Length: 526
Image (cartoon, rainbow, N blue to C red; front, side):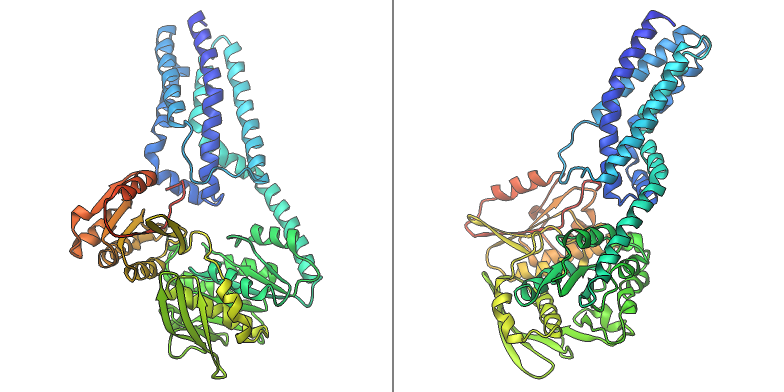
């Protein structure tokens, strides 16, 4: 091989070490956000094909191995070097909302991917030592750079038996621990939205009354629940509040097979995760897997304010809560102010108890009423709950009120469903001041995504004085909806970055207090 090509090969290999590392971290992060599902990740890669144009260019130029002479090889290999350099720039360090979490699974994936990569680099060195296939050394190195995203998926496939074995071991251990606590009563809490809030409200009420275990944060997957049981379950616990999340049919059944809930709560049936569920019917079927898993004497609580639950009631006997006149535990006389909400709850026995909370919005009153109903079912007298309801804090990023001088921020960034967005806008519309919405829109709504975002825009037009959109492409439907509702286009501002949007909001001059609603915050894979 010509000395120039030898030098260029060395430089390409050294450059590749950094490029492959950055590509590995970025693509592993996206794979993690996509739930380690190859099908979901492939679909995501298809939607973001433009991001992979540098990889495609590198792959095309890797044809240097088929060069017939040194001149052609020199031209192609030089172009390949600069293409890999461009790939390095495209995979440079990014500002991330939530960086890659180096779990044990991720570390195993990294090791397997690096072993595959090292084997390919060894193959490149072998080709370099041959007389007739030396240019294929560039082909292999180029392929490593271009196909790192695919190597991660191959590593995941290789690791799958091991991952299943590890998960099975931990799940069996969690099941044994739960079985060793025969007096423990588990209540499964699921729903298209509202489940995390209800779980923490119920925990705030119950924890001073009896020993209660709760899944932390948004731990609502099989391994999240198993980790909670293995790390936190004690023989003294009497109740286990288990949040159950789902994106696919069968997810709730899988969780029920682990914890075997005696009681259940369904907070809502909505359009969230339509993209993975495929239909509203599948959402209903999946959420009701919780009802199907309960014993005959198990209590099932349902949010009777949710129209879809009323139209599709579960087969299992249930207890209704909400503001609806037919609710068994009915909230009424709701009075909201800048510092919270006062309301009363009528119980099935006809007794009425007055409550007040720091939280905003009728939907939060409904969720608290559900927690009151469940706590009462466990034997806690309703009047004893007043103090604990008053102590309930907003779950971070779920209608959390944050005062910043002349600006009041309603942080609802975790919310991403149509009903929740509508409820948040209704709360905003009732507040005094310059009402500002900052949102990137809603995702994972399948074929209905544009339609639902357009409806969101129409609702925003009625509730806001200023609409600030994060990302032009993602929010086009919201803009259309707002303009169709007669909203002044001069009061719609769009920027690609959230930080730039907030700088704009803080820079708006007004003699009113600014009320800023942060509605949804898309993860890094959007």
